Length: 488
Ligand SMILES: [Zn+2]
Image (cartoon, rainbow, N blue to C red; front, side, top):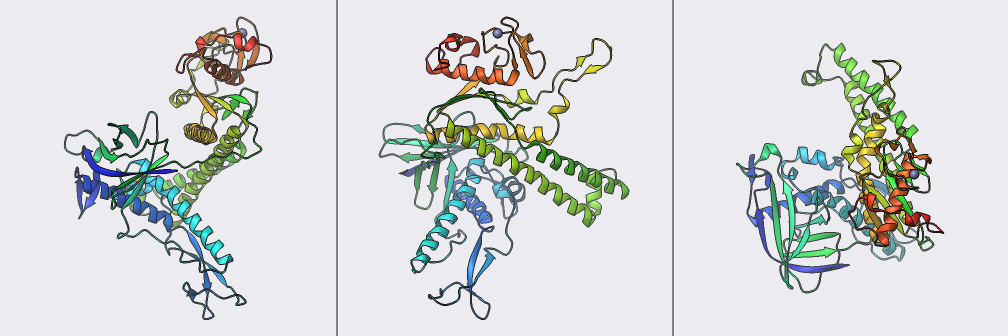
């Protein structure tokens, strides 16, 4: 689960922006200052999240909160819900960054980890108290906020791949270093230096480090712990068979090789979108009625209470829509990992999906244009599926790893141009956005299903060592397709 190491030295390359110290913008390359800065920022984020928790207090006869003594059996037990803090802090990571100067340049993998750690610690404490109380033992106090005099700690997620973080580099058998990278904002560039900086934490190893999902640093004790949290989402009765190809997209969030479409709750999102537009129109009308032509001036002059209320509502609607999509992505990824041993997904570059389709001129009416799916690419629905596709892939990656499933990422080139029946490739195969018509064998398929089947064929070829990871889909021969009994 976890492996402990000793920090022997820390090096800082570049100058991280550590916020305003006594009202002055400050940078530092001093290892101790930088490590303490990370610990303090993490603790700050942790405490903002903690302030949202609720606890149940016993109430005395005189209606005062009683935290010390618990009623003995037979005594009436009155609970009252009370927030841990009178002003719960609801700011998001990015709002914190904008508000608090010393959090501005903290790497996302550190700032974000506070959320999970806070929740886990809270829930375990609540559970522990519950069991103790059931056994008529003193449950002890609720956990509170992290204090300045506590050990200075922070947690950072480990991530492989393109934007890797907290990677371990081995120097020799007994030594290695963890690299944490970060970036200053342009407005807070240090002299003429690059915006990027990195921290190398050198550690002494006593055993081989296994796979890890996060590192926990205790700067007071000079300890660094590698932790591997299994997040398996499997149940005992889950089937271990099944292989599936997935094609992410805008029209359908996911299309699988069995021909199923996985769509976001579009109707719900649309109605939220409509409400947002309505409110936004009202906002600009209010601004014009007040005699301003831009929002900045209007705000400076002081907006009306109704304007502010509408603004809050818009914000909440966006949050609601985001939650709907997040929930959908979590459930779908879990379901896919449960039901399939092998999952192949297109390694889509999101930039490609963002491109708006080229205009098609109507041959019968010069100057007029045919529908090309451009409007379908607009709107909240698109925005959200766009923003969650990358996150969805990340979810699949870690859930598949935790459940011991094979996840194959297929290079996206040509996947929609190859015929999944005969292997013929032609850029002109797409009759429209939705229909695939093969110019050789003549089969007509849904374009997304065709692409999804191509993913599956690639996965099979890869597992049979017919192609190497990273090869183009054009290297996949169709022999697997014609073999009796299907793919494997
Ligand atoms: Zn064909």
